[in-house]
Length: 480
Image (cartoon, rainbow, N blue to C red; front, side):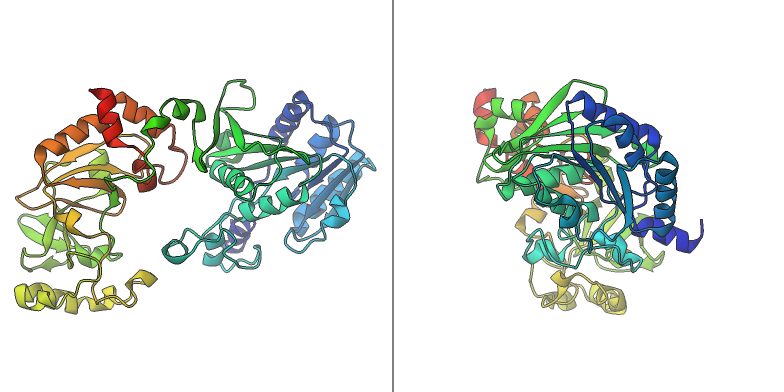
């Protein structure tokens, strides 16, 4: 594949749906009693969904396909011409600029919007200077640090699906779109937060390796809309063929992965946690700030031997070390330049001059850190640091791994152990209290509680916001 072809594939999130899968999706919709009058595929590609829809839905009076890629458009139009059915009409159009009311209209016809929208994020578009995206706006309404540090990054299909949801409000209609599972949940969150109409919602897991040769957690998102209902839950099926499911839904505006299990344990939910889980140290310059000790010699990430004082050097456990329970010893170390966020670092000059000289010598790397969180803060600043960083006992877990494995960790080499920012932890000064808390967190009830909240298909499934939801004191009483 040429560089240009690869860029186009990324820009358009190009995962063409095989006819086999399109047929299976349409067959499922027929089984569920869906009988649309009008079918619309807003990014129809080569037209496989249109062909499957024509074969499956005898009730449809009109089938529209819209496509921006001229090569795919020509293939789809040629296929439609060969089929020679006047129900199908395929036209050129850009989703973000197309006159959708001209197709959707305000009639009372039952509409089915079907297809497979681009599987690409706006940041991926930016990395290739792509233009296949909506006008830039923080449509999720993130603010402050969340917007700055990347939470405002979004899947293009999320924005597109929101438009489709708006088309189908206050009328009878269906949405049946292949998308990432995480995007499907965001759409449910959007519908709930905006108090929109939703009669029912379900997702059916798709085997992306089989159909797209990709490792993506994806599903068929199926929504049924009418002019009255506001049912903010979603039944999750493991495939298009199974009838077994679990239900995700909202409990006091919190999205819960397994609402049935959670409701049994809701007395353990803590709105204002007294014990706060925190993430590890963030410095965004591993080549300078992190070291490996080889034969008693410190080597930085640039492969250079380093001679600095031990004063600001602390044993480091990466997220993978915590996940694999390699927590007793470490060959990794990190420079911790501050005791709390925003602290002046001038004291390093006096207490550790070699360390200061080292930071000055590599300032070109540290000064280039792009995140806005370093602006208006002392030079060589770090984040994710406070009194809790230096406590002798910690319970830690890696947020990236798909397993609830908590670790009880003490000092290493008579110094407090610190973590990278993929790790979440709570800290203790008292060893007995740390052990007691560890017993509570590793109980089956604690794991059931957390598992009901965690969406394991996410890139970082375990989050501090979820860990903080468990009332440890209430659970301790249950376990007595």
